Image 1 (cartoon, rainbow, N blue to C red):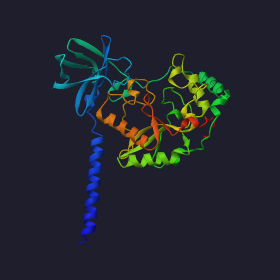
Image 2: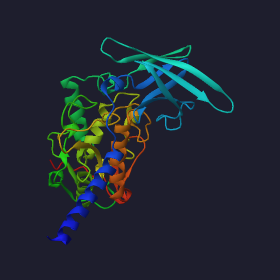
Image 3: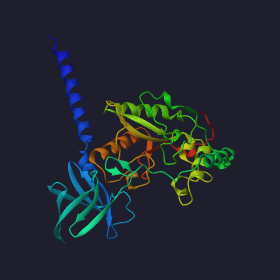
Image 4: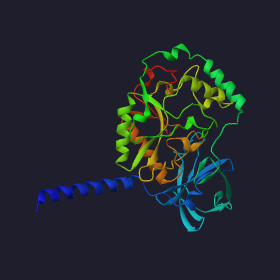
Length: 350
């Protein structure tokens, strides 16, 4: 008997077991659908509360600062289940010791529509499309085909400001070269906040410098059962101009001003990404949808489920471990290296 070979095999098996245990601990099982249907934002009495799932239990988060968009600094109160949709909240401390009943009311489809805490009732605010959210995906006011034709012509004739062209020009390459990475070019379809495509084809391009880094990200994620989804990458300046023109007055602040700042995507060194499950091939359910203007879009959003928050953290930690920097306002947006030294480009390489 080859004991050395047997011990090597046992060691490899043990290592795999430990690694898998670590992965399972990092990404907990998702919450049942009936629980997810009552998670979310509730408002009333000039206040906002957030109901989330954490390690199999419900928690109530009370936001005491209006500017805390992500609820990351909210007070957290565990809820003890009494029976279906009925819970008890206990607030214990040196200054108070209060117990209150918490009761959820659902609509005929099973979605939570109100939450009563003691003598106060909070109504549900549906934020976006998801298992617990019955709202439709966010869309800007619809434009006619004639309106879009005029906007496209105006964007095509616009000239990128010279200051934005200063700096090193990144060499752009087809993102299809990234083995294992799924390309889901959201702006090449009508399934986005504009309700119309910004790109003529679904091809996406990235700066050549991103290829090794994104390949390393994909490899690291694959070891944990996930793959990278690329929603957007290089964006020609004229596409940014078109997006800005398509935004109604009062909504222009949703994107960078193409005339003054341009978009990091214009350099080719910014990407919008998510995850997919290697076993099923399906995109995972994150804390929010892409381009969803709600508290759920923040990288530190404290709501949702443990499963969603763990997947969001896995994506962020893996991207940042390989040279990318995330932003707080959009959990899906990452930039690579010293992006400020690179020129914005308006090359339609499709």
